[in-house]
Image (cartoon, rainbow, N blue to C red):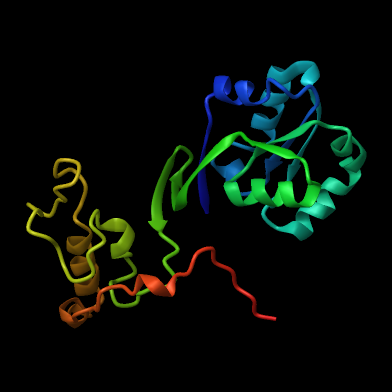
Length: 212
């Protein structure tokens, strides 16, 4: 899930100062779950913008051009007459909206990370999208994200009482968690394996995947 947070309303309004007709697009998946771009937030922004808001819609998945085309088709005339689109979705969705509509897109959210949801209001980064997943070797815990230093071969010297030195020994050390998980799975031998330094050249920027 893509975790987002709302930009300050004042900042969004400043970005929209030069636009008189603004169409608002929300996200029915990740941003809805984050409570940053669902029906409620889209309606709230429409009320704040007042007469500037010429239309609104919550697209099921704005980052999917096929779904975007489907959900925006009935609003095409209004969008064509708008000055800009306020995107209450992740950066990928906002860029897809821009590519599909050829309109000025104002991001209403900041995209933070790929994460998991504990409950509404509590989100944790769990994937860096590194392109080299090794969680089968580390008890299902990603050391690149969970370790403040991204270490691949055990804890650093700053670990104390199972806690990470980054942030004042409050957060659990990723490698202590990994050891305990592997121990519970009867796979402690995996902990002893030496992993090579990540080859960052494998992740070319920008990325794309074409399977057909």
